[in-house]
Length: 195
Image (cartoon, rainbow, N blue to C red):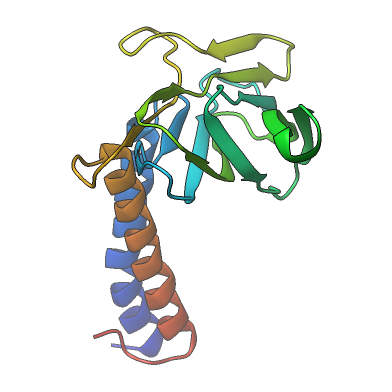
């Protein structure tokens, strides 16, 4: 068996793992979501906002995140290919971020991903509505209640560590699988066998 054939055999399982991961992530994020879905009261936490393009043939060109009262958004991350505009209210020490608009172009039927850092001083359920604009000018407001066709992303803030997050579990699985794929690809590219 030649060197190329051995490499192809090593790459096949990695390619399959990547395909399964991407298929799983596409179904897992059928709506705009924020993860993790649970946070601890008072803790500053990194969150990931995922906004899937669900309209065939249309790019996502705008994403607006509205920040509810009581949820302290400290940082809205930059995203490659997107411009960011932050809206604030109040002055001095009382200034707070009330909304973030990202403008750009996410290819049709792919997922736009943004990072934010925030916290909440009180326990409770925080709805973080998302407005998604498509290249034809149509808009989807992810602002409805749980179980609706267009549910709002939600963060449940708890006073203790109890509870879990299925969204966080999904993100962890995706990141882990991509890490395995990228690590295997790097080893193959360097000509080392994959164990």
